[in-house]
Every structure is written in structure tokens, then in C-alpha cells.
Length: 264
Image (cartoon, rainbow, N blue to C red; front, side, top):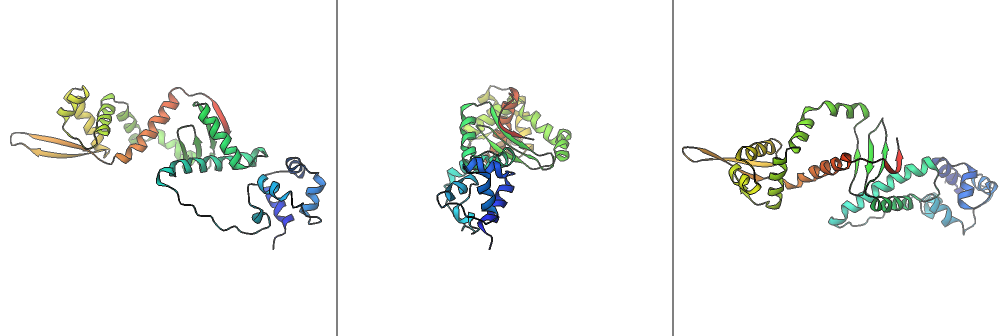
């Protein structure tokens, strides 16, 4: 069974702490750390919670016991907040490892969250040119998995460029806004043009672009002498992706180098 000394040494090395650095964080001498790690002596029972807090683990884990996973039911509406908090905490663990910060990952994550909420132009990011990156601001947090060379190819991707061009069309955004506010509406190019203050040609081209991206359904109604295309919003949940694109675009449109936590 792994001794507490060996466990402590492994935890210290995982954070890139020297014995001197760990001793200053806990408030003991470097000699005490050395004796603990060599199993010459044991930490005082009053210091065990302090050591566990430093490494963001339980006292049982400090003694080498595998903790039983605590399963917590998550309310549907709380998933986004939980995921955001977990993202910030994961980033904080990397900052602690690199910067030798004395706070726990949870504490650092909470500080980051408060700072991002306080300054809407602040960002946090960890970028690996080998394995994507992680980004967060006060409104969103995301993980980007493609490697650097694969990310570069996105600049040559005509489908991606075409979609951004589609979103840049004011007529498309007006039609989308109308459909989202009236999600059960069944429309034609003429009817939505009247509602949105567009020409029929503008609304027709906007609907055609949205149909190509599967954001609306289209059915043709045979009127005998003519055929009328009828549209309906399809898969409003996909708007989450558009909202993310728009949120990032807004950030990039007046980007400020206000980083609270950054690694690259």
C-alpha cells in the first residue's frame, strides 16, 4: 500500500512544487516535508486537512484510498452552469501546475468566474498547438479539439466561409429573428417580406440560404398556374450554434487583450 509519504511526494511533483515551495504554502519547514516524504515522521493530524486542501483532494485520497464517486443528480437547467464551472476548474488545475499557486483549483476557478463576470471584456484561455484549446469569457466557455494544422485548414474551408457570408446578410438575420419569435409560423417569401420590411427577392434569397443549411423546411404548393414555396422553421435548437458564432463575432469585433489566466 502506498504510504502517505510517497503519496505526498507524488502530489508535490505533479504540481512541480519543490519541497521548499510546498513548505511555504503549508507553513512548515522544508525539513518537515523531507521527513514526511521519507516516512521518517507523519504530518500532524491537524495539518492533514491543510495538505488535502492544498492538493484539492480528500484526506482519504491523501492516505491512498480511492474515493467512491459521488453521483449528483443535475437539474436540466443547471447543466450549462455546471459545465461552465467544470471548464474553469479544469483550466485552473493547469494554472496551478504551471504557476505553483497555493489556492485549490476550485478557489482559482471561482476567482476567475467572478473576474470574468466583473469585466465583460476579460477572457481566459489555454491554447495547445498540439491539441486545440479552451476558452472562456463571461458568456460562454468552449473546447476546441482540432490540432493547429487542422485549424489552419478552416481558413480555406469554403463551406465555413459561405455560412459566415450568409449570416452577414441583414435579410437573413431579419428572417431568422422573425421565425424565432414566431416559431410555429408558416410563411412564404412574400409574407415574410411584408413582416420584415424586405423585398420579396431579398426574403426569397434569405430563405433559400437558410434552406440550404437546413434551418427551414420547404414544401411546394401547386396552385395550377403557379407553384408557391411554403417555409417553416426547422430545428430551432441549432440556433445555439449560431448564437455562439454571433457571441464570438461580437467579442472579436472589439477585441481587447484583457486576459485573466492565459497559457499558450
